[in-house]
Length: 518
Image (tube, rainbow, N blue to C red):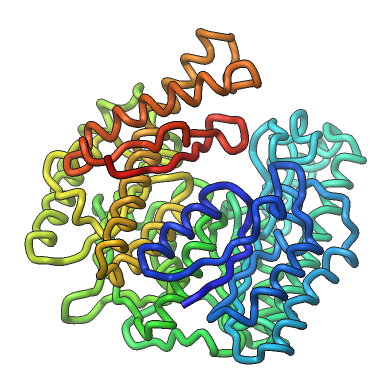
């Protein structure tokens, strides 16, 4: 099987992860050459990407396309570029051309409802976000709440006075343009140019302009009677070829992996039955940070995205999904509340890990999705997993960024693991499993914090520059290898490929590295 993927951007989560999952399933993944893709704030070469799609499409069994990359030149370009709506929408015509030439090729597309970041930082946003980011976020929340009937006009007027009119106008005009692109994507779906569309919500919340736009898009989907997002149960049809399949849910960086799993499941005529296990009683009803519904709904939506079903009846599922549910603190893990969290959660986590061990003993395949905290693993859960579970036998693991990112990527790996029958595929599975442990626990929870503290001592800065990036990458690599040494089954057998560690966007938030057998 050969699948083409036009990714959301060039970061490893959108390129390396899908490639590693494809290797587990024995699938060939075609990605664009690096020089055609975006590079942080530099957009991709959209015309060349369209030509690349036309060239590879005849040799594919399925095609997955991110609309941001095709229309704008990448995720960041969709937020900061000045391309007019007409130029952007016209770039989607290549999908109609491919459909005309290849009417039976499954084409899956995904696009993000533009976020409004709640931070005064402009690395990924227009430059004015450095000054007005939190105020724009607050105004977005108030405008949506007022639209739903709350008496907030005075507060909105005061906040509008605090934001320059040209800044507010630019932010709204960009959102209008991007909303037009989302409507154009719905038109592609309704006209049959694509088989499936995911409209995901990046860094979303129950209120805000993004949530308001999502409701508008959902109303158009209802008018067009397109398929809508809903929880799955055993026996529901997941055929890729069903016209008008629309999924809407929080997510972004995991969507490429989830849709890859979906086309693999369809190609192999599999509909994996997945049974969730929630660590904390009632925790499945908590809304995770950056999402707009309870984590139970996140699980159901991600199961639907990968083309699975929620196992609710008798019989053994294909996969168990053990979920460390969100902490009510709704923030990254911090040493200051570690003792209290341990008292509140330890017994429940211990019971969950015992259950994982028991299922492994009975030959069941288990994925662990740790969504207790955004941007890194729960140290208590990792302590228990290392102590009690055969890490090598896990079908998947995730603990990075948002709950949707974690669950979608971990489910995609689990689906691929069901197909890992050859030694090469099994090694590919262990490589990605270790990659998740090293990055989500070793780096995000341990090494990243230490690297930031080191930079502050060395240079008085929080992020590397040209004078420090080489040294900090070498330091990170050494300490990632130390984390591997703490993982039973992997220690002494695997290492970070020497010299492979890098910071893709020259910041500590994300890291890239390769792994090799010793």
